[in-house]
Amino acid sequence: MTTITINEVGMRDGLQSLQVIMPTTAKRQWIDAAYAAGVRHMEVASFVPAKLLPQMADAKEVVAHALSYPDLIVSVLAPNLRGCRDALESGAHRIIAPVSVSEAHSLANVRRTPLEMVEELARMCQLRAEMGLHNVQLIAGMSVAFGCTRQGEVPLNDLCELTRHVLEAGCDLVCLGDTTGYANPGQVATTLQAVRAIAGDKLRAAHFHDTRGLALANSLVAVQQGVTELDSSLAGLGGCPFAPGASGNTVTEDLVFMLQSMGYDTGIDLIALIASRDVLRAALPDETLYGCIARAGLPLNYSPVANRA
Amino acid sequence: MTTITINEVGMRDGLQSLQVIMPTTAKRQWIDAAYAAGVRHMEVASFVPAKLLPQMADAKEVVAHALSYPDLIVSVLAPNLRGCRDALESGAHRIIAPVSVSEAHSLANVRRTPLEMVEELARMCQLRAEMGLHNVQLIAGMSVAFGCTRQGEVPLNDLCELTRHVLEAGCDLVCLGDTTGYANPGQVATTLQAVRAIAGDKLRAAHFHDTRGLALANSLVAVQQGVTELDSSLAGLGGCPFAPGASGNTVTEDLVFMLQSMGYDTGIDLIALIASRDVLRAALPDETLYGCIARAGLPLNYSPVANRA
Image (cartoon, each protein chain N blue to C red):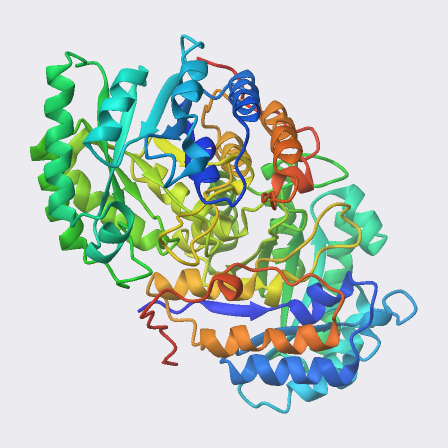
C-alpha cells in the first residue's frame, strides 16, 4: 500500500487570507485535533511581520505547541532572511520559501523579483549552515507555477529555469504550487514530468487550490505522476491575498476520502478528521466551511484505511 | 484533438429530484440556451406517469421542442415498456433504460429486480423492432454501478454479470452510472476496464455525481480510460430521489472547463454556457446553483477551445 503524506496547511495558508484572526488557543486546538486524527505533517505559521499579517503574530507560540508532538513534522513559511532566522530559531523542521514564477506575483507577494528571491533563498541556506541546523529542510515553494492572476499563462520554461536556480541556491525540496487555482490535470502531468527531469526526487510535493473545482483531479494526477506529499486545508480554508479571486485550498477531508477510497494509506482517521471541523466552526463562526464528504457522509459500510504503517 | 461529448442531463436528472416543477417554457429556454452554447447531446425528459413524477409531465412537449434542432441528439429515460412506447413515439433518438445493479435500489427505483428489468429491456428492444425504429438507440443505464446507499458495496462481478445480460437483451450502448456518488477514481478505472472487456465499444459513456466531491476526478479517469461521453448537469442540479443523500450531478460548466483546459474538444462555448445559468436562476430562484468556474471566473487570458470540428 502506497503512503501519501497529507500536509495540513490550513493553519498557515488557510488562516492568512481571512479577515478575522484565529486566537492562539484555537490554533492549538486545531493542531491537537488534526494530530489526534492522524495528521503528521502540518504547516502551522508564517514568520512575517505581525503588522503585515496579524493572523500570524503568534507564529512562535504555535510552532512551539506543534513541536510538543515528537513525531509531528512542523513546517513554516518564511518569505525572507529575517523570517528564516526566526523560523530556524523556532525549531521548525521545514521552512518554505515562496518563490513565485511570475514576476508580477513575486513583487506583490515578497517585493522581490523571482531571481532576487532565489538570491534570498541562497542566503537562507547559508544562514542555516551558519547556525549548524543542517537537519532543517529548506523548501522552495514554487508559487503560481501553473498560471497567475496577474500575468495569465506562466510558461513551463520559466518554471523549469527557476527550478534550476532554486536547486543551485541549495534548497532541499521543491513544491509546485497552484496558488491561483489555474492548473488543469493535463498541465499538472506535463509540468511534473518536466520539473522532475530537473529536480529528480527533490520534487515530491504539490499544492493545489480548488478555486475552479479541479483541486482533487489535479491532486489525483499528481499522485499518478509520483507525487507523495500533498498540501490541503481542513474545510478548504484559504487562498492567497495577493492573487485576486483565488480561494480555497484542496479540502483535506475530501482529499483523504479520495485517496483512502483508492487504497492509499494516509494514516488519517477520516471520521476524526471530519469531526475536527468543529474547531473551525467554533473559532471561525462566520467563515464558510467547504467540503463534500463532511456534508454527504461516508458511503454505507465504508471502511477507512486508517492504519498507520 | 480528441472530442468528448457532453450530455447535458439537467433537464431530466437535474429536475426530477426537485420539489418544484420547472415550467415547460423554462425547459425550452434551457434547451435553447444549452444549444446556443454548443451542447449537442441532451437528456431532456423521463417518460413516467405524471402522478409519480410531475416534473416530467411535459416530456412529450419538451422532446418535441428539442427535436426542432436538427443536429441535437435527444435522449430520454424510460423505466418500463409503457414509457418506452411513449419515448419511441416521441421521436427521441436515444432511450435510456435504468438497470440498477443493486436489487434494493432497483426495487425502489423501478419496482423490479435487476433481472426483471433486463427482461423489460428485452421487451423494449422487441417493441422498437416492431415499430421499425431501428435507428433509435436503446441504452442500458447501469445505475448504482459503483455502490449503493441501500446495499453499500456493489460487487464488480454483479455489474459484469448484469452487463452481459443487458447486452444479450439487445441494448446498443451501456452507460455506467454512479447514481449515489460512491465512486472513486481507482474504482472507476478498474470498473471501466472490466466492463469494457465485456461490452467493448458499446461502453463509451459514464455518469457521475458530485455528492462526495469526486465527480471531476472520476470523469477525468473515465476519459483516461477511453470514455468519450460524459453526463453532467448545468449548475450541478440533480440527484436520485431513491438514493438518499445523493445529490448533484457533475457540474457541466466545471467539466467543460476541465476538459477544454486539457485540450479536449467539447464544442462548447464556456462563456455562453456559464451565462445559461441565468435560465436556472430565473426559473428556480430557490435552488442552489453549484459550480466553481462560474463563481471564480475564467483564468486570465483563457482561450476556450470552442471550435466545433
